[in-house]
Image 1 (spheres, one colour):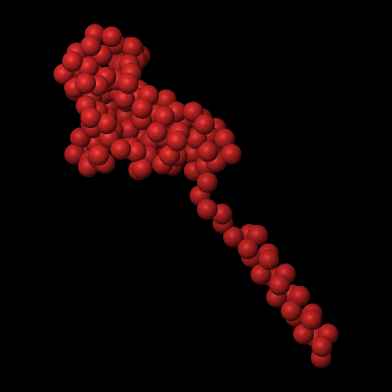
Image 2 (cartoon, rainbow, N blue to C red):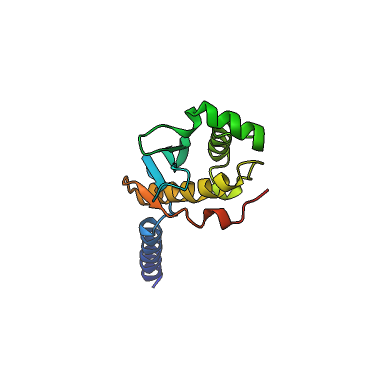
Length: 158
């Protein structure tokens, strides 16, 4: 009788361990490069994008920027930078680096606050970063195209 209990106890423990080993793990990010970009150019001719590199379930690099139809990068536009800095106290080369650095630090775009003069870009950044992270969780290396038309109305922290 005692051997019977030990046998079934061992079977129960083995089954429990096997079920834990085969249970699906929490959705982690798979290693690789992932990108999300706006589905369309905005009214000013820019298409924002976020590119991330993931290693060991951690975002290692982030690039957030925008490009025009010819591929020119928004943060390289010095005239636009001067105009924005004078009117808003901010400019693309400054806020894109800020949002990228915060994503590296926080690893969660939902915990990143908007900076003054770049609240619309903050909403777009959050949508794009979340899409890139979803691609990393799925291991999908295709570019995710994100509708940013409602980004201006998305409530931003800060």
